[in-house]
Image (cartoon, rainbow, N blue to C red; front, side, top):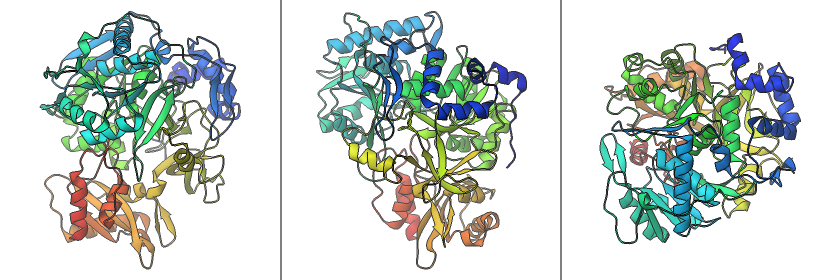
Length: 631
């Protein structure tokens, strides 16, 4: 596959990455990347020195020890809040727009004052260093302030997805032993009031969390014992001095089975990794404005807030639907707030395509410099639409793949190399990534397991109170190697491609294929909006492919149409990989951050327990799959 985007030589020299490389004596990116993984400790030391972080006590070593339990910035003391708020107090830090169009903003000075007020108020409520505090809010100013205020105290934030019901929130609060829950009473979603406070009260009863602090946006009345966020007062104090690996956040990610995994993140880890990736991949600068469509409960929410603030940029926050009151909403916000960086998931892009190009063309997108995407593999047509219509064939798409446990990316795109559609032109600097074959040996030109061979600042300390599960999940396959669970390919020109989760991998008559390859082939049929490919047991082939397809609006399922879709896959991948069945459903099970949950699709089809469903935005899709399977 040929590149679709090429860097401009003049623009290369203006990037943060090139300027950092030049400061270290590099002008060739490949040589720089090799240095970043061969001289790992020096690379991280040089970058964070370059960034000018305000260490209370300098560290002795950037990295000590190897997998599975390394230590980072040994002996150093740093509170992430001081790193995030060290900038010119007059500069704009946060911009927030609500779904009904209200806009608010905080400068770095105003943000510092608000964080100090809220931290003092939390302390007056009895929150102490090491206490866990649930944060159940949509993306807004209060979400960012509270994330920083808990960290300032030395407490540990538990971000919770704003779309969860009471039971899902309670599982996380109870597992973490939360002392306090902070909830926003509600917000608007597609013009309707979502009264989150009512769910929070149910969650507290289930989780036995004693205290509730309420941010009142809808003005719902409080009950006895509930504290109004606006009333918080206390004696201001400087941020707590923290050891580099003291935890500041416990963020949950769904497991294939059993309870969710609580990934533990520390002051000199997640925030610094976010800042590094935003600087070296996305070229985020102080004058830029970053918007990633996400939620506080998914890692990209804290990632954007903390990484953006550490780099001194402006972070834009939005708490509504992307297409309300109309399909032009996202693009109008880009124009109105002069946003420079826009991050969307492939699923969201696919959802916007049926509205056509007119809503995009109606807005002035001239401020946009960089597009971003993460969460799942791309299909070709939506990628090209994003590049051509939103990117106007000149803006790079920084494809970004990693995870909650990583604190950001393993793979990405740098703006110094050509970019291929759906691909990654590099492993992230400092990430010693490789594609491994079934024996654990590096391979090129063949599909294998995405792995990381050396530790990096930002890797989770582990799962909350479950070290054995953590070690088994990432280090159980090959000793001393982080196996991420993604199916990947490294081509001959050094570009990576993610082909889906390796536990989603299909193996038909000995032939391995990633679900994304099947889905890309199927969605070339003009009738399909999206689809999900799964592998099911077959008496002869070992495994057969079943494809669940969602049609574009106004189209009707038929056996003939199913045959046409199956034939599209056969044409692209060969007859042995032709789907055994094509089943039409109204929707696919997805998380709020738009990941298609193939393991849930497979379990529902086979009549098995689908495991943890708390992250699903549309649980009704599971029943539709069961019905399709029985038809």
